[in-house]
Length: 222
Image (cartoon, rainbow, N blue to C red; front, side, top):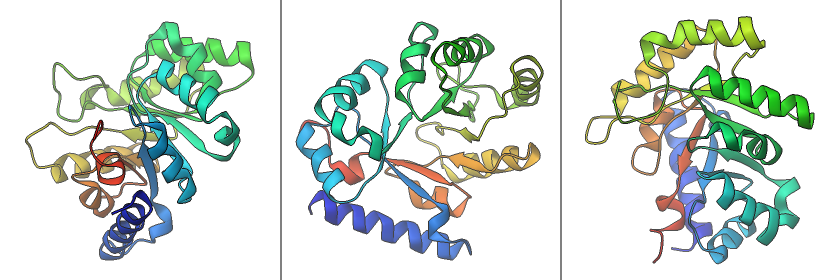
């Protein structure tokens, strides 16, 4: 299948999953994970009407959307879905419309300092380490209430959403259910969860944004 055909298929599966959950398909946004994809695949996605893209690395995103596809930048939403170092905060603030991986106060301070300098502030999602994995980034679920309180009291930040990556090798649905309940507990409406292998499950569990790479573009390097 072409990228356009894959995109239509994915959107159809999102619609079916949303219908199953008695939701509207329009409540769910498809983020095309464009990291490490060759330019011709990005071009094909753009031609197919894709307008939301997710990048893992600031430098790679700068090269792609500030150079190769600079003419398209104002017509898309660009989301940072990979970890962000504090020394890249200003570059990220300048480039991205949404940063999904806020996970510590030091980073929040760096983002707000960059926002004050540039006059631009992206929407912010808090990454939750939903499986409490030592090797993974994100705020531990038990620490989320305190983190949200600190964001508001110190920096007047109210996150737009929560994001998670479930543990590999485990059923995703309990983790998606858990994130949805955390969001409800704190009055947060947006949930970025679900990737190529489990985006339909994520939609059924309340995802508002799904991050799909290989199912849309094919495997990298092929």
